Every structure is written in C-alpha cells, then in structure tokens.
Length: 108
Image 1 (cartoon, helix red, strand yellow):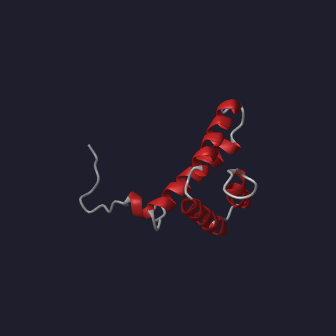
Image 2: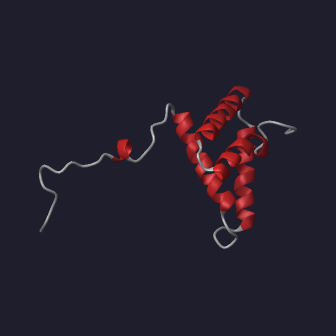
Image 3: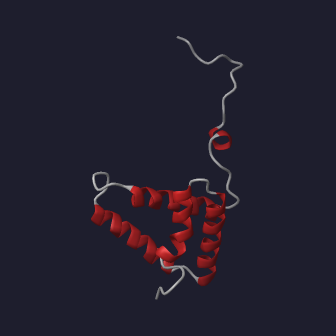
C-alpha cells in the first residue's frame, strides 16, 4: 500500500484555505451572509420559495432583536465586508443588507 512519505508536508486547512477573522463575531457574520447569499440566489428548483422567505424573515426578526450596540457592530462589519468584496453583485448584497433586513431605515 502506498502512503504519504514521512517527509511529506501537509497543508493545514485552517491557515491555508480559510481566511483569518479578527473576531468570532466577524466569522459568524461572514457565515450568515454566505447562507443568506445562497438562499437569495437560489432558483425555485433548488429551494422552495416559501421556505426561503421564512428563513430570510427569521433572520430579519433575529437581527431586529439585537441591541443597538450589536446592530451597530453588525452594520460596521457588513460595511467592512462590502469594502473588501470583489464580486459586484455580492458587494451590492452586503451594502443593502442593513436596510433589507431592517437594521436601518423605516424598520419598526
């Protein structure tokens, strides 16, 4: 059986493939945006539209219950993420997130 040679250098996943985040909050915001970006871009055949709306509304409800300080932190993170984003469509999604999910504007 052929195996890895003793001198093989293995790439560590956490340093080679995954970005490093300055905080857990930033990492979780990135994960949340990834999921919502996927849902937002899903075709009806990929995800039931009614279920997609339920998820999106659930997230809007959750972020709406954050304290003002937490909402401000999330808005700041989204702005930082948008500035660093190279995909124009995703950048637009990030820039529109605060208003679209009720963090700013006329949300009650």
